Image 1: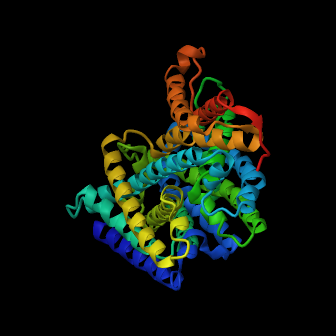
Image 2 (image 1 turned 45 degrees about the horizontal axis):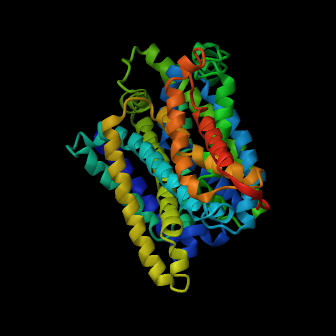
Image 3 (image 1 turned 90 degrees about the horizontal axis):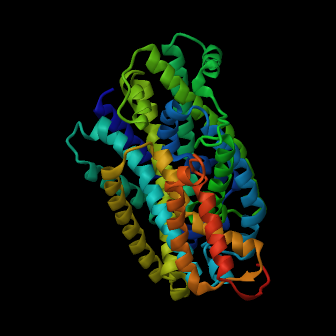
Length: 487
């Protein structure tokens, strides 16, 4: 497939997204940007969140990851369901009760200003790095298969992508994203399903026979019982559960969409629906990954340097123009879907949690909008810088890096919210920033020497839980005398 055709598909799809953005952002105000005026239909939110939850990481990295870990990722997905249940029953009622725009305002109410700023800071770091990981994956693929052909440097490609996302989200914010995510989820799923059927045709078989072949192949192994393995199913299940709690329930990006629903009841329906839909959708991605490896073996395709390039390599170079076009549209859909909401949530958190613009300009919507625009642009520039920096250090599948990094940055948030929700102790606010720094550092040391310390036990994604426990313990040790009523 020619780079010109790939680029043309990208341009046409981008124009389509801008058209949707223009329609949805008319008459948008600050409340539209932050919480969609509390008018978002829950079913549309749930469907659109599929794309935001999956992102370019799932679209490319998970199929490529199958070669190394089989279907063990599916255990993480099962843990997601229980994580979403915790969000629906504990976190969403709290957020709606307090009528929050930024979920980190809870930390100010429960602990004090230092805890509030610490929580917001960790979210900003987490989301900047997370969004950069996801965008890096997509941009690097397009760079290799398209922009290198035109002699365009990587850093220019990054600026183009972030500039486009910044332009179509700066006005409408969450109100626009609710609808663009719906469109992008649709295109992403169409791309995956279409690719599967094209592979079936190329292998001259049928979907039932190929499913049986995948199931009988060791690549589809789901459960690893070795307790010392990073892929042990108990570790992965608990990790999936807690990853969901922190990367959705304690994440302004994902919660901002839920808070845009009309009511708590609608937000709960959204969470439940999303958790159930993600099971078959992720299974489809894993099935695609297995098919790609079987396809490679059947046609003796040389392995790519990066597992993240297996899908694009086969789609662009072996499956024909149709597969290439649907792949590029699916890829861009996944990239836009995760990056646009990340940029909006970063703007929201920095504007409200760090700068306090909602209080400073409570009676001046024009000045609030003007300053919000500045923050939006600044966040874009920061993400661009981090993506380019990440280009220099990437050396493994992005999905693995993303979950590992989440263990360090979301761990303190897990500890803070757990302590606040499940105890009545009065935490010492002045020590919270110190605890939030020490907990990840201690977690790293434990992870680094886990084999020596625990008789060969290797810490995987459960690093997040360990980090949260250390934070919780630090809050317990430094607590003040007396108790308070839990919020």
